[in-house]
Length: 216
Image 1 (spheres, rainbow, N blue to C red):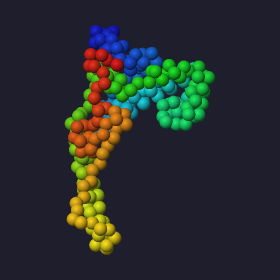
Image 2 (image 1 turned 180 degrees about the vertical axis):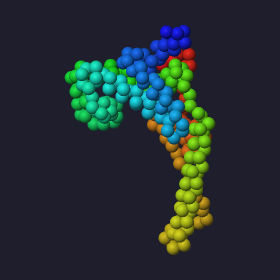
Image 3 (image 1 turned 45 degrees about the horizontal axis):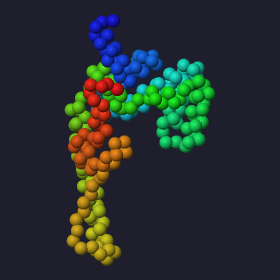
Image 4 (image 1 turned 90 degrees about the horizontal axis):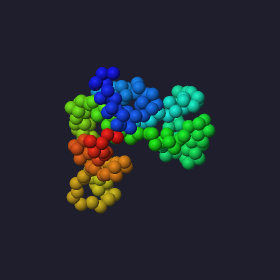
């Protein structure tokens, strides 16, 4: 092992994702995560998607280790039942099946990672980054497109109200129409106008949750 490899290995050991890759023997996953995160805009997978990808790999390996040998899509379905908002009875049934096969589901849940952990691993361990300029062009194009859509909506509303007033269906004095779109992020519980959200590059979920000196 070279000095560079040793340094990378030590950084990986300080991150949750790096430790789990070693523990579950998922050596190929790191390169896959980096490849999927650094693709061009429009093809690139976000950190939350990659966290789900990684967690499904953990579940698949756990199932294989106890001899379940999951078929295509089977591990994905179990992951959905364990983590999504599904009926309580279905969640319990899935957990009991896995536990009956020898998987400690509660321990496995503690191994599931967040998008912050994926970002820390990709940037601090693998030194990965993506073309922010390409992303900005995409955001700008989207902002212009949505702006035109809101403008058309405003025009249609004004026309319909004018028609109703002319037909004596409603009483309405001189007026103007204002249209706005508000986006509420359930994860970080913040509310933004669409224009503000695009201009600032996202909501508070995009802020690093852990100090840069302490890798997750």
